[in-house]
Length: 272
Image 1 (cartoon, rainbow, N blue to C red):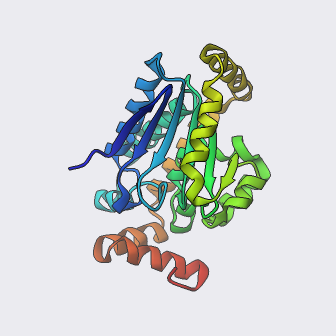
Image 2 (tube, rainbow, N blue to C red; image 1 turned 120 degrees about the vertical axis):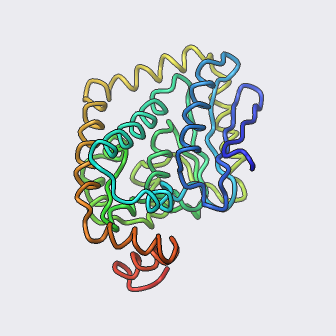
Image 3 (cartoon, rainbow, N blue to C red; image 1 turned 60 degrees about the vertical axis):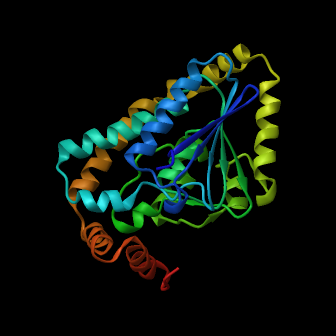
């Protein structure tokens, strides 16, 4: 079996590449553990100045692994709290990694993938990228409520209340969700150029500056807010709402593609 996360050092830059291309790099337990460990290792390595999180294949990340979720079936409150708090804590540790981090995003960056991108300090994305929290549309919740901290409350409400999952790259740039949009064939080079520009600076200064910027969020209470979202998400997941049950059932019996088609037909009147 191939590794789920590839590591490459390019001078002072460490590029981590999610490597589940056949699953659109959906986040299962193995990949989440690998990303979390790799970020921690990079933080402790004095030779690393900047971390890039990239992805193999045609998409950055389609979200959490829904096939894994369907196989698990209905779970009790204690299990959901442990799982959701664990995932949120992973994202928070990524966000507060001492090193500057850049997400290199192509094509789909949905649900947990959007969380992952938002947990990085910066994001360079291809012009064919699409973002959003599709979880809402099959009765699930947002795992790590980072969106309001990046784009603001009012826009977050619009995106989360609708469950829109086709936010194009130019709109993501306009609302401050991402930093730069480039042609798809220039994505890797553009991301590396930004990383190299950052790496020219004294690492200690950049790390202290990052800490100072995050102090704004600390004073506003980002960690208690994320923990409050865990409780909201536990309530959503344990409610086992009809849409959630049906989505799991179709995934188990007919496969994930059929479940996504069912979900999309409800909202878009098509099987896209």
